[in-house]
Image (cartoon, rainbow, N blue to C red):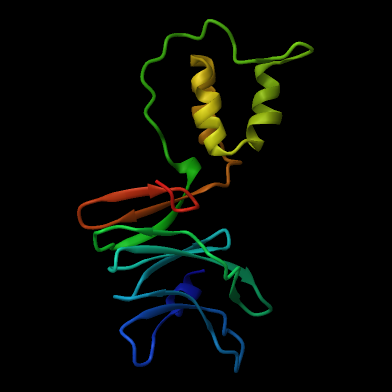
Length: 187
């Protein structure tokens, strides 16, 4: 990972632009441009097969990477999300969701345990925690489950920090502002 990052950036000949290269680790193999920025040497980070790149031009770009026989190569050349701001960005990196802690105001004690009811069944808290919530995405948990009750809110906060969560957040910063974005570069 660190060796690949150190050798990925290469100025474009005859242009005032920089590109982030991927691949080219085998003898004679030419690297491909995965991302291009217009201003400076971009700051890059790689995690879970995703390369994130921030530049002084105010853009954050993504590239999907895949392992090849001798290194990595860019894949999925379709439209990938771009985050644009009016500030010069100094950096971007991936941080695991489970490493982010949130502040929960003092909630009243739960009058009932968290459970889901239907006309035919009751899913108790233990089943929700082990067999349902690990498969729900962050947006579903925070926007639909957490507001159900104070018991749900506490358990969702714990689920966000669970070791099995693999979601990444993009941490991007300028000299005055920091942004935390999801994997699609949405705030």
